[in-house]
Length: 194
Image 1: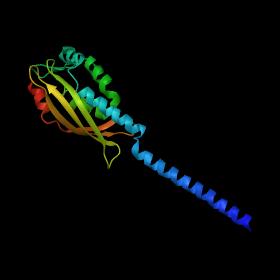
Image 2: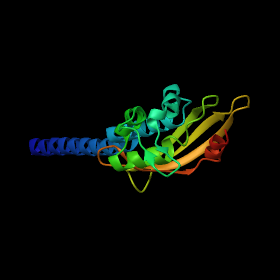
Image 3: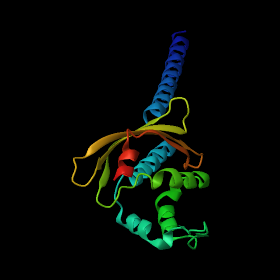
Image 4: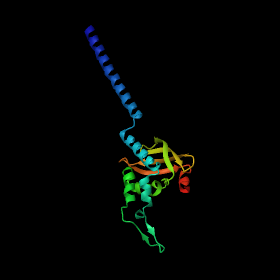
């Protein structure tokens, strides 16, 4: 009889040990997903940081040369006749190399037309990023909100800090499919004035 009780006691101990081990694995597995971002989130953060750094760091000497080169410009004559350069221009190729791999096809064109060149400082001024804070949106895992502290200095003046806020949406392929600046605290105006 003692032998039967001893066997039942061992059975319960072993079962209890496996049950506790299973619960422990479950808890550790669930908690580690919350603490460590997935590799796709890491890639999205890296992509967004790269785009922001390319946009808010300058001047870029090569870009300045390409912008001043008449071979990259569309010329509109007095009679409204336009003369476009052969495509793709060196400027097109430069912008494609710098930005295209980070965007969907539709968003690439929109970003170049709306933001990329709007935030490029003139040759005598400088702009650099002080910090970038990117947070994944709590309600939409493909959306990232960001705040970028940008230091802009006009030649001969003290630098000013601008907080640029916005949002980026990513495709399943890890490319930016939507992008918007919400506020730049007057940075775009300061760039136009220089």
